[in-house]
Length: 632
Image 1 (cartoon, rainbow, N blue to C red):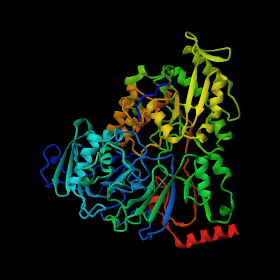
Image 2 (cartoon, one colour; image 1 turned 90 degrees about the vertical axis):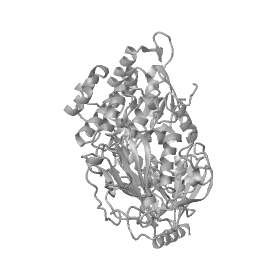
Image 3 (spheres, helix red, strand yellow; image 1 turned 120 degrees about the vertical axis):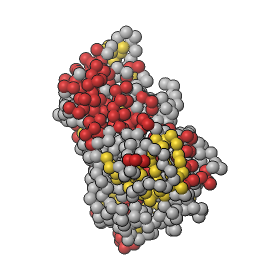
Image 4 (cartoon, one colour; image 1 turned 180 degrees about the vertical axis):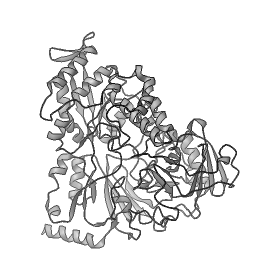
């Protein structure tokens, strides 16, 4: 097969901090009349008032010091997420999650205890026009780069022009609605928005989460190229040392300018954070047990069940905990089909392949009951479909009735029936019948095209050997109806290359949706993304109905419309059988050495170990003493 470079929780209203309506359609002159607020939120009004001192889920007096050792997966080869050439960027440089970017500050940062609330970090205020025609920010005074140079409004303007015009598509596309960038004053900037995006209430978040770049550093370098030269930043950490592809150490900036901001107080407490890279899940598990890394989210069921009842755990110096979360979970590594392969373009073929997947059996026998059964791309969220379409959903779906399966309107989407204790003959018969309708039949034990005699084959490419193992019963079920299969789990960079270039028949893709998804739907499932280099639409989905529903999600400005759009979208995506839904995470399974202080909190949107834990000298000594006693 020849590859090609193509893909290198609830909303209850929109709360827009804005300006007087009289300013909405006219020019905004300088600093006059703009009513900046301290944050921006969906769902409800923000939980935290303008004078809040710190997030509730942190310890504002957490001591600074110590080391946190974590792992990365596979390898890495770049410090530049904006590079046009596909690269694996090192941990700590996220462009879509400010809490996971250690080097740069963003204008806004999210609260982990609210579904979609963002507060000023580099920005002391945000303003949004009532009609969405512009977004303005006022940055704080006193911000500076690690070389001591002040961070200015010129840096902010440079960042957005560069990201919009020169960066890779995953960064540039979300910013395309920005038509003009105006500096209003020494600390104020305004983004004019294209008319078609005026109703996009998620756009202020997409703009506000972007990491701000130092103009005086990058204007002498080519930001379209990968680099392993440590970049200049302004955030809580800088790069200390590294070995390309193997490990990196981040060191805390002791005089970080934003240390005492309300959104930063009590956060990023470790003096050193080290990430060692491993290509194998087994090695990660042994690394945490061997005290090479401190913390691990265990996603391999057999390891979770069998590997951690060892002496340090029994001695109480090693913890094994399940952590519930309140984020939407989506689907965990569902199989998808390469729709550029002709045999997968027939929906009957895709449904037949789904009928052969027996998740309850796999979860019981292979996965130790580790996963929930996912029936939605927004699993663990009220955004997901259930039952029959509501009246609001039908209003969106009826215009496309002739393009959709009639069952979508008359039947709830359900997984193939299963007792979890063996093969379901009815499912197999239904699958074989669908194959026959699509022009494929079993001939002497081989599934063949009835016209050409071509055998039906599937080349599976999995992200890891453990994922391959989880799908082995499914692969065997395909073999039993005459489908010839191959399954492999290459090194991570090779897997990523194959996904981006289309060098596969079937792959897997993890999907954990945002709390309020918008552009990400376009990037993963939109037709335009199928033809964009390095997009996340690896299945090559080109579906005008999904495209239309994505626009409805993005345009929704109230809870009722938003829910209707996400549920209708979810329903169509499922009934198209582009994916084989099955595994869905019920929460995080954490294993770690008990040498850290941990703030008390309820369920949050993601684990807080990097951001909000701290080094506890007494606990660390207890762990060291415990390990020493066990070694005697």
